[in-house]
Image: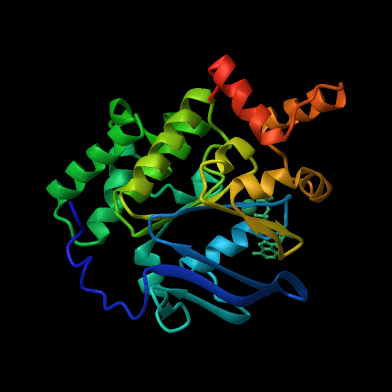
Length: 282
Ligand SMILES: Nc1ncnc2c1ncn2[C@@H]1O[C@H](COP(=O)(O)OP(=O)(O)OP(=O)(O)O)[C@@H](O)[C@H]1O
Ligand SMILES: [Mg+2]
């Protein structure tokens, strides 16, 4: 179900989010320096980097919560300086701390809040909310208070809240940081489904296994894009990653260790693939 009026906005460019030579300072501290990147619909991009490198700042720019100090952020060709509400509508944001996203006391109302604000009737909003809660496996919690949820469940609740608004792009800031293995698997599944629905997904993550879902990875270091490439290209540069403070997939570390022990491993990625196949690891 599409929100009423969702297709009324007039696009001025191609379907993509662009940061063009963006710099951001908080007071005298420059936290993003001349950052450029694009996120196309139908693609998943991951942003990795050490703590305080500027990852959350980058995605706050994308939905107009923050305007660049210099440079531009465009959503479908519309500059967030000219129309931040277009960006807010098109780019759904799953915040790093799910507590920042809670708006109602009851789980169902919390998810229904967004569609109601977009103009759905109460009945339609509740129907969309129930559908979104089932997508994240929280339908049985619909009548509970949000305060009864665990940290991981609150993280899933904030994803449901964003799904209910059916945005064109979804920016997720470390969406699995509080989740167990089962919850993490579910979020990965949701990301896969969203991608096939032609949305653009931005995933800020410290988890290399999660970053493997992406079509492209951007590594941020001290406010600058230090590396950009496919997961295979990025994780092959494991020494650079380690010096920046970014983890590599566990399997890759394992194959490196084998090589160190003298095994003739060829290239690290083929070992990684073979181990996965033999052990049925995903
Ligand atoms: N509102 C703010 N006012 C002042 N400084 C800020 C503000 N928000 C972020 N910062 C600072 O900007 C820098 C980048 O912060 P940001 O949250 O973008 O980093 P991050 O890469 O998301 O970090 P983390 O991995 O810890 O989430 C940090 O030094 C942070 O302390
Ligand atoms: Mg952050």
